[in-house]
Amino acid sequence: MSQRPKIRCAIYTRKSSDEGLDQDFNSLDAQYEACAAYIASQRHEGWKLVPGRYDDGGLSGGTLERPALQRLMDEIDAGRIDMIVVYKIDRLTRSLADFAKLVERLEQVGCSFVSVTQAFNTSSSMGRLTLNVLLSFAQFEREVTAERIRDKIAASKKKGLWMGGVPPLGYDPHPDRTRRELVVNAVEAAVVRQLFTLYAEHRCLNAVTHHAEALGLRSKYHVFASGREQGGGRLSRGQIHKVLTNPVYRGLIRHKDQSFAGKHPAIIDADLWEDVQCALQAASARRRGATAGQPCPDTAPLKGKIRDETGDLLTPTHTKKGSKILRYYISNRLVSGGTDPTGWRLPAPGVEAAMATLVADHLDNCANRHALLKECDVSLSGAIVDRTIELARHVRDAGIREAAALIETATLGNGRIDVQLSSRALAAGLGLAIDTLNAEVLRFNNPFTHRRRGVEIKIVAGTQKPVPDVALLRALRNAHCWADAIKSGTALKRLASDVNRTERYLARIIALSGLSPKIQAAIIDGSQPDGLTVRRLLKTNLPLDWGEQERLLGFEG
Image 1 (cartoon, rainbow, N blue to C red):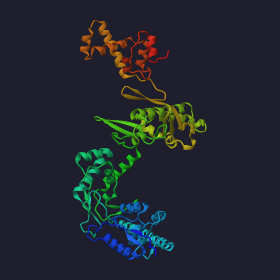
Image 2: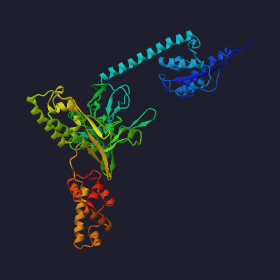
Image 3: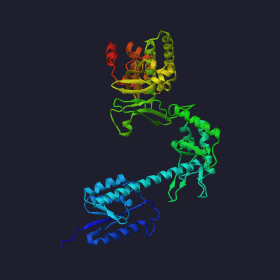
Image 4: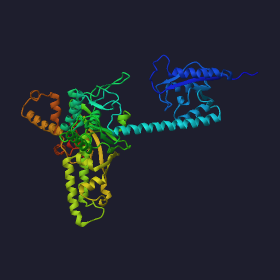
């Protein structure tokens, strides 16, 4: 008589909550004993219990990402287990979709599973059909229960009840646990009032954050039933914004996008609440970080508007040098992916000034060409030209604050910048209907590059007006003054002592007085080549011939 093949069985147990797991005999142990007894009853069929336990305590059956289940599946994939034994099928999974994936994976390796309290197993087609039906009803029951709970929470919140969770700063749960209400925590309520008062005064979240830290204001400290502690640290910008926009402080309970009168007292009076909400809404309509009095440190009017030639957004960032904040726009991949020689890193003030100038110049150019309107209208043309010139002047005076509102997108690359203006913003600025605008005026491009000048980066965009270099002017003035002093008989050593400089430095600067008249005139009016700096002049061995000097320093003949 042939011996029956061995069926290696593993027991899997699960419990959704961690309640009671610290007891000597818990639900997992009860499931395990029932399954072990069932395996023993099937010994005549060749069933054998493998050593080791696969217990998932305190984990939901809504996902397969459970440590013990994953270990069990690894053993099955390795061919060391032929049958999974569970107390009930929902111990293995409560999701029909997950069950389908699980059965498919088990079939691939020739493994089945059986429920000891439900008379079927997946080794037969009828068992699989029955299991699908049961799981469908289990999932339906689970979804109906979730809907019932959500409806109960919504109905309770409409009555102004607090439905649990960590209470907000300024409140504690009612001491009577049968009453779902909040009571005021006097100490924390004072912190909430300070935050609202600070924002009403400064109108800037960053300023409130700094003041809150200086005053030692702290977030809600909460101890969970398990003993875990949370909060009690410094208030972040996001936490402060959440406090300032939480209607619970007006005595309301929020449910999704609606608020209902709560059973708890308000901490903030109506006038202060309305003042802060209006200020927050106004701040969100302005560029991020702008305030009524002074700009916040994270001002970035071109945020989300500029891309490089790869399509990567230029992200605003900043660094501190002492008490000074240096702002930049850099390719996003430099933030997320490290170094990249093709990435852009541009000083924000230079980019913003260049963009404002480009927009103003473009508007002036369109006005001069009478190119604003889609169709020529003599009766409107003159008025539109005047409005466009006035808008260009306003952009020049206000700078990037006004220019950014007109810019929809800008793309850098190949030595040029392509700018797309917002049709809505431009039409509003000129008092026109959008469909009357000439589409060609909404897009323009100009030369754009950046060059390093010493430790600074200079932005070169569009048609540049000559701007004298202060350092070059100072060096040229000193060169002539010191040369005149030497000619009048002052010794170089004495002169170096008088101006607190080295003799070598004076000799190098004095040599600049011998520059050609063309070079000196260009330095004075700011029309010198872009790469001409004091450092370059001092490093260059300048010839005496003026023509050679001009060719060497990049002046055209």
